[in-house]
Length: 453
Image (cartoon, rainbow, N blue to C red; front, side, top):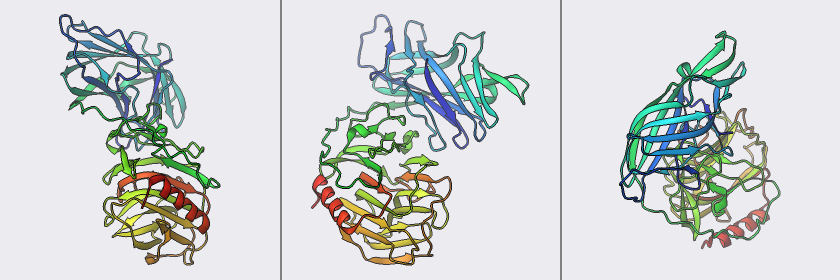
């Protein structure tokens, strides 16, 4: 059984990563160029992208092996599929998470890729009408892609290969009512990107604060960057992130609820850094497009408490470090800063509090007891102190999370504006209002953990 590559709609196109990597992934019998001295090897990645899919369509392919061949045929790298990995994408993951990451290869020119799939059943094509088997073409032993890849010392090369639904999938039987689909050899090479390999990264020490959480009742989400084992390079939470500077593709929920946050698009992945909040690690969001997202969640709550530990690099910006819901009045909740003030929003029903510290480690706690927001039902605390409200855009009404809500960490619910710029060490969500005594207890815990002044 090979690796599964799920190709699901991404706005205007679809895609999947096959990253050829050298860390802990099996390399099958690489043969170096004859007469060449072995040196530190550069790295190669292969990305498989798809297009022309409709809403509710998706393809799962069972990959068993990828071969990379040199121009003279003397070097062949055989990268076996990993049956434990199930790679998938959604609308916010235009680049699929890693199947293989940056595989080291010899310097030279490569001219062909070979893709091998399960011989009888290469995958599944899911449509609104049902799921259909994808069958390998009997006349094709392997799916070959001609290309020209120049690999030089000290570089990391990414090769993009395109899969078009209309050309690669051929219906068996009637076009409107097929029995299955045949996978044709219509994979074509596209863009090639070459980057210099970065200097070696420094491993982050696991300095997690081991004290027990003081409050667990109602804790439905918990993301903690000091728990290094909860951070991963890929969106499937399979490749641990351990180095300062690692881009995070998955942040595991440590509350026990299994609500893991993912980011498959590499350019949108926040960065892990050590010693950002106190002496402990934090995740840096660039304020541009970094964010984690979870679609169509099954979270349900009205009353709640939000806990944030981190800092804001520029509090004058309109930004949200968290949002959940859909874009309609009182149908989402978000928190962040706006013109220097702390903003606690129920979408067009906003409350503003005293200015938030800029650049300094900060613990923010925001609570909502439920009920009409024209009353004193929302409270915000900064570093353990309840903040006076400095303004509001209250329209009244109670929080009522809308249908098909999205959960964002590092951005607003719209997904395109109000992106968080700063460092986030810890985020906790409770499905109830914490008492004042519990909030004092929580702040004392965080102050001790992060050695705050």
